[in-house]
Length: 149
Image (cartoon, helix red, strand yellow):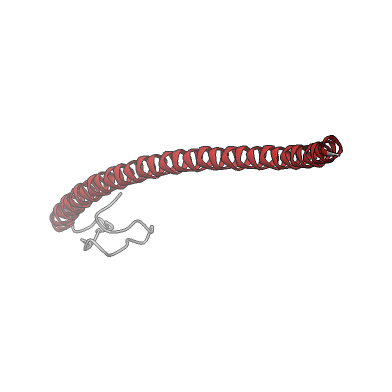
């Protein structure tokens, strides 16, 4: 009887061991699934960090390009301003030269008028077309502005 009771206990304990072993295998499977899930999440986190690093690098490259373009724009503005100043200076010089030439032509017109008048006075029988002196903004009958040829 005691052997039978012991055998029954051994069978009960064996069943408990088998159940515990089966439960342990199921739990081990769950642990392995959770480890795989943790590894997958860690990999996703690392990939996201890599993407963030790439984006930060691209952003810094864009910032450098913007700074470079801004510097180039500033330099272009400076060059344009220098060219504009030179052009204004050159226009002023040209305007002064034109005014000087206009005065010289007006003076020549006056001299020619005086000489023609004296020639007419010294030759009263001859007829001359006497040019009249013109101002710098007047036009002669041929259409050329005063002081210019």
